[in-house]
Amino acid sequence: MQTLTGKSSRALRSVLLAALLMTSMSWSGCAQRRVTIIPSVDAEVVLRGGQMFEVPHDGVYLSNDRYRRYRRAIADQILKEQSK
Image 1: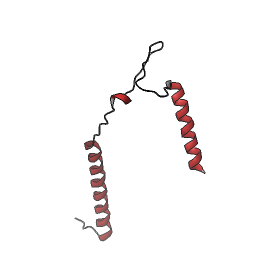
Image 2: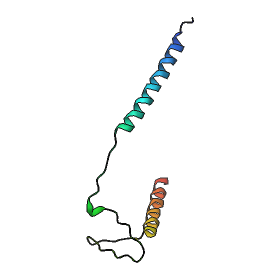
Image 3: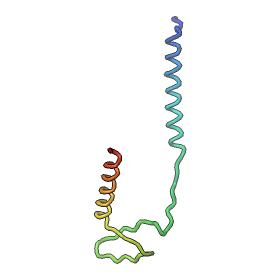
C-alpha cells in the first residue's frame, strides 16, 4: 500500500474540506424557509375583464401590461446608469 506524500495529503484534505463545505451549505439552504406574510392591504387581487374593483385606499392602479412596461423601463434605466 502506498503512503500519501505531503502534496497528495494536502490535496485530499482540500477535496474533503470542499465536499464538507458544499454539503453543509446545501443543508443550510434547505433548513431556512422564510415565509413572508403580506398584510391584507397589500394583497394582490386578480380581476377578469369587466369585473368591478373597489379600491381600499387612494393610489395609482395599473394593468399588468402597463406595470410590466414601466418595470422594464425602470430596469433599463438602472442598467444604463450602472454601465456608465
